[in-house]
Each structure stands twice: as structure tokens, then as C-alpha cells.
Image 1: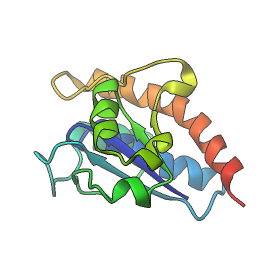
Image 2: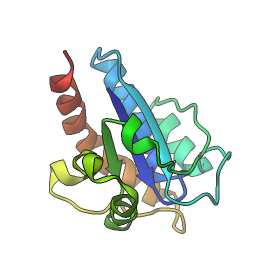
Image 3: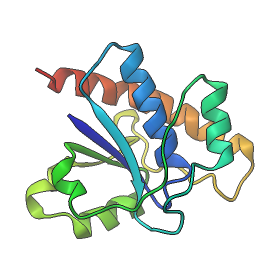
Image 4: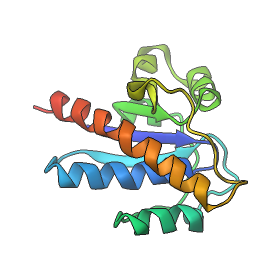
Length: 151
């Protein structure tokens, strides 16, 4: 099982979800799941996550070993579950995705009846805390779904 989180630049929301999902899977004792993240754009390719993202994850004892990268065409085949941070990301992904893989695309917050994870990039640290809280709740549902799909 492979899970990919996708946002715009891959330095705020998707790496936060990436690190948090890995930690939640670890705490749940779920092995054999690869988690990654990327952005629809390449502006930050090769960079570490935003310092505010790393600070929020550290505050919650969540590690992250990741450098930003852009979504690649082969990601649609390689990953089993591709979770977009917002409708714009999902729209960009859907345009590029081969028809046979469209069913793998979802909004990250769908399980908690929300739509978009707001981009905290231009705001202060509290926006990163808010994003963490949303992801924390939604990812509980995705962890359960991943667990139930494993043999």
C-alpha cells in the first residue's frame, strides 16, 4: 500500500500530512505502508518543509524526513491512494490522471465532511496549528481505511 499527499508546493500542508500519517501508522502498529508527499508545482523542489511545518510536527513529536518534489505522471500508477489538500489540487491531479486511476484521488478532509485544507503559507504560526488539527482528525479515518485494505 502506498499513500501520496498532494498540495501546491509541498512545503506546508502535504509534508505535514505525510509526517503525521507515518506517525499514526507507526503508533497503530501498521507496517508495509509507504507514505510520501509532493506538490502540483515545482517552486520548492529539493527544499525542506517550511520551518513552521517542522515546528508544529516537532511540537507533537512527529518526525519528517522529506524534501519537496513535484507530482510526476507515474505517481498515479505507483500510489494506491492520492490525497489532495484542496479542490484546486484535486482538479490539477484529475486533469493529469489516466482514467484508470481516477478512483484513487480523494480530498484529504473528505472523511470529516470538510473540503479544503487552508494553505497556511502566508499566515502566522497559528494557521499551521489549525492545519495540524484538521489533518490529525481526518487522518484517523484514512489510517482505518488503510488498515482495512491490508491483507
